[in-house]
Amino acid sequence: MKLNFLSQNFKGYDVAPLKAIHLEQTTSEPIIDEMNSIAQNEGFEIRKWDDYDKWTQDFKMIIEKQGKPHVVANNRVDLGSLENIQKTYGITSESLDFIATGGNSFIGKYPNGKKWMLIGESELKTKDFQYLSEKYGIDIENIFAIPQQNYHLDMFMRPIGYPYILVDNPKLSAKMLSNSNIKLSPMDYVNINKNFKYFEQERASHYSSYKDTIKALEKAGFVPIEIGGVFGLGINFMNAIVNQHKNGSISYITNSTDCDSPYVSSLEKQFEEQLRKKIPNLENIYFVHGKKEYYTEASNYMMDELNYRGGGIHCMTMEEPDFAVWG
Image 1 (cartoon, one colour):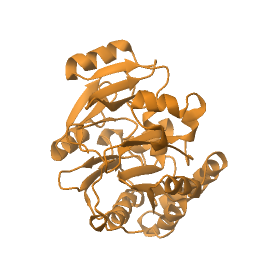
Image 2: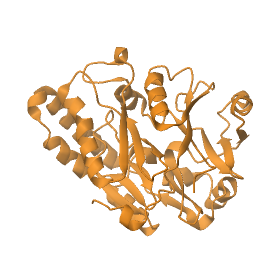
Image 3: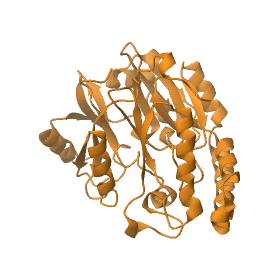
Image 4: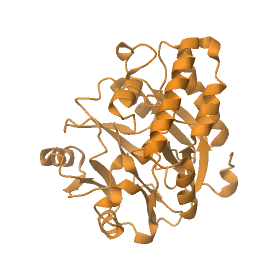
């Protein structure tokens, strides 16, 4: 599905212009140089936390309150860290008994400025829409529960500008793998395809189909764009940060497959080609891999984080939109 955003008056309200990306300072060393370079090129800041939690946005989230950034955090986040972030960056905060996990929810804006929220169905076991509406300042009718293809929404989907949302389609991923050049590395070709099939069997036995996700998004008024973006535990291009520019174009920041294997490394180029065909207003795409000393055989730092610890670049960062200019 290829879309002409300009002909549809695309304004990208849910893809916010970023003011800053927040990282946990004690665990971000392997990616800090890359993130600083991206931030400089994109025009946003890198800000640091000191709460010793690598998964920066899973236990806290920056929302808009009275036009300014405001952190909502659960009780796992140390109150001292919240006080420090207010002293350092002037960002207010509050500790709640329940928050919508940053990796399992997305907040955006309609063209009229009203907010919407997508939230994974597993988040609703404790609190209801009324609670979320009150704490996040979002009308109940604009909060939508989405069937999950994996444990968090950010592992299989990515909003790219209302009403468009990228959704991983495993069939497209499988097709990309089968069309890949086996001559680059026959053994890696066999291993990746084998691991992908096992991953999909396990995932399908515990989570929803991409078709269920698409139906729920369409019912909520969104336009899903199917793409092959997940190729097993360690290769995930859907787990991404998106930055909006003044001219309406966007940049996409995701996990790299650059490593010692030519075959594995080639997957990110294939994904970029696919992404540019489907998103005509895509300006820059960045693949974060981590420092070279963290490379292992047919893998890199970010691939290992995804494979063994279940998190990628979106999990390790927390976005602070520039609320003064967003929407």
